[in-house]
Structures are given as C-alpha cells and as structure tokens.
Amino acid sequence: MRRGERRGHGGASGKAALEEGQPPPPSSLLLLPQPPPNGASLPVGEGPRGDSPPVAAAPDAAFVTHGDRRSTESEVYDDGTNTFFWRAHTLTVLFILTCTLGYVTLLEETPQDTTYNTKRGIVASILVFLCFGVTQAKDGPFSRPHPAYWRFWLCVSVVYELFLIFILFQTVHDGRQFMKFIDPNLGVPLPERDYGGNCLIYDPNNGTDAFHNIWDKLDGFVPAHFLGWYLKTLMIRDWWMCMIISVMFEFLEYSLEHQLPNFSECWWDHWIMDVILCNGLGIYCGMKTLGWLSLKTYKWQGLWNIPTYKGKMKRIAFQFTPYSWVKFEWKPASSLRRWLAVCGIIFIFLLAELNTFYLKFVLWMPPEHYLVLLRLVFYVNVGGVAMREIYDFMDDPKFHKKLGQQAWLVAAITATEFLIVVKYDPYTLTLSLPFYITQCWILGIMLVLAWTVWRFFIHDITLRYKEIRRQKQEHKFGKDKYLSNGDGQSVLVNEYLKNKLREKKL
Image (cartoon, rainbow, N blue to C red; front, side, top):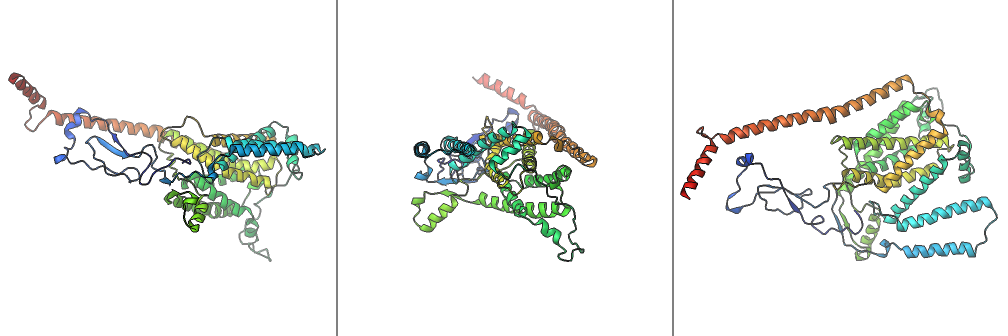
C-alpha cells in the first residue's frame, strides 16, 4: 500500500459492488427458487472481510466484493497528512551535492596519492548515484519507514551488481587481488574450518569438559542462524516454504561436503542445532510476528495531529512497522504456473544460500569479515521487497506485465554470484558427487516430476472427465423432468395447445 492511497473509515476503497451472475440456462429455470412474497429481498453473504452492509439481491445476484482489493490485504485508515518528512526534497539534495563538489574542487587540495584518489573517486561516484536514486528512482511496494530508504537499497543493488560484473570480467588472480583494494588483509588463501570430526555429544575422554564438542559449535553463527531465519520467515510469510528450504539446505550441505569442508558437520549439528533449534525457533518467532502484523489495526495519523506525548512516541515507534499488510497465500498446488513459480523461488533461495559459502571460498574472504556481514544485511533489506514484488506478479488479479525492479535485480545478482563461483573455481564445482548422493537426488527429482505430472495433468484430466460426465447426467435428468409432468403429458404439448387457443381468441 503506497503513501497517499487513503481509505476512509468503515470500508475498503470504493463502494461495495454487486456482481451479477450469468443468467441461468432455460433448462434450469424450473429449478430456481421462487422469490419471497411482498417484494422481500433474498439474503446476501458478506464481502471478503464481512464489513459490507446488507444489499438487496435479485435471484441472479452472486456476491458482494470490495473493489480491486484482495481479501488478504489489511484495512488501512490514513488521515492523509503530508508533512516535511514525506516530501522528496530533490532541490535540497541537489543544492547540497553541488556545494560539496564545489568545496572539493575549489577549496580542497588534491592529494598526490594515486591509490587514495582512485578510491575516493569511486566512492564519490557511488554516492552521487545513490543521491540520484534516493530522490528520483521509482517507489517500490514498501513505504515504511520511508520510501527513500527502499529506493536507497534499490540503488545499492545496482551498485553491487555492477561490482559483481566487474569481478566476473577479471582473471582469477586479478579478481582476488582486487579485493586487496577494498581491504589489504584480503587476497590470501584461508583454511576452511571443519565442523565435523569428533561428533560425540558426551566425550568421557576429555577430563576438562565432557561436553566440549557442543560448546565448540556454539559460536557467533548460532544467533546469526536464528536471526536469519526469523527475517526469512518475515519475507516468505509461509511456514511450509520456510521448513522446506531449511531442510533442503541441510541436505545440500550433506551432498556438497566433499567440495567445501565447511559443510562437514555432525548429525546433531545439522538436525538438532540448525533445523530444530536455530531455524525452527526462528521460523516459529517469525510466524508469531506475522500473526500479530496480520491482526494489527493500521490506522495512521499525522504526528502533529496526536495530542499526547505518549501517542506521539507510539506513532514514532510504529513508523518502523509496515504501512499495511498482505498475507501471502502461495497455493503452489492450485495451478502449474504457481507450482513452477514456487519451485523457482525455493531454488533461488537455496542458490543464494550456497553463494554465501562458495563466494567467500573462491574470493578468499574469512567468514567473520565485514564484507560477508554486509552482504547478508543487503539481502535482508532487498529480499523482503523482492518477495512482495514476486507475490504481486503472481497473485495480482490485474496481472502485472513485468517483474518488479527489485526482484529482477535480486535474480540477476544471484545468477552473477553463481557465475563468479563457476569461473573462479570450476575444479571444486565439478568434483563428482558420491554415488549414493547421486542416487538420492535422482530419486528425489523423479518423485517431484512424477507428482507434478500426476497433479497437473493426469489428476486434472480425470477431474475434467468426471465433471463432464456429471454435467451430462444432470442435463439428462433435467431434460426428463422438464419434458414430463405428473400425468405423463408433455409440457411442450400443453404449451403448444395454450398458444393455439390464445391465437383463436385473438
């Protein structure tokens, strides 16, 4: 819901409209219920949210709707206050930018360090582009805490994609050494940590601490796992999809541990610490937050229109919550198009997760480096917008003609990261899978394909055949009932005689 799309109290945008159904065929007219006497109206069910007044309906009336708003979208009440905070300030930003560049040109002495000047020139170019994007780029689906915030991350997406393209076009050696240009500590090979090894939960041979294996695994990545899956749940907004992605990634770690030692973990690290504790608890807390957001009343009032200081502080805090809420209903089994779209979303999620480990492996970045953390922060901010744009692309009844800008960039970034991994270390990626792993993946893919064919082809054809057969039987039954009255006389003959008598009287 964008800023300025205002809905009044007591209903959705626009008046509730009565949709008329198609007139019934002549053969079914005798089966219709007769209208009640004295002009009384038939009862009509409530609209999608049950906030419509009763509407008198004809026998062919269908139901009451609320304009174009989806039933999964929350009600929003907004007084329409447009304060200084919400204005674009394009001239102000342009003036400050021009003054800054003028100061650097006229008053600041340019250093003689070529490397420093190159770095500063690149950073200044990026900042100018960000200033342009924050003030001039197209708004996305989110408007809280401010549309400029999401425009900023859209421009960061463009900058990051251009950086990846630059790295992709370098040689492997030059690309790795270019990382020294960002941080002098990079550009050197780093050993991968093996999380496997001794997998005993209780180690009696260790006299100091028998549970040392557990404490050794409880590093900074445990809260990162929990927080990551909490935020992913807020993006996906579906418990089943989150659990499928969580479990499938653990299977990917099992399958690829011969390529990256970092994937080698103990069984209890995979399933107890990761899937149940970290991921499961993050998904649970995320679903609870989603439930609260779906029930929250979205009533917005200008800060200066609120009389009390407590109300003002509450309004400032709620500025960092969504402007409105849409419950995602992916319905993957409803159609082949939605099933393939959901499978594509899961694939992109898993590929982005794998890129995290493979990128730092091929570019020689330690896991605790700030660039790894910045990439995760980047995906947290752009992932939610991308998922909303993908859902709108799939679910909007108007059917958007093109994919959203942030979703397009996220897909391009994920693909470019994977291509960098392929170019920089093809040997690791081409290490053959163990035979039993290959068999498991072939079996899993065959089961998915078999279910897809059964659900969207064989099952649909069977249902279509049963529906056609049922309609034929109902048509035959209705025809027999129409052609015969209780005396065995033809109704058509009676109608013909009545018409003849009427013609003689005339």
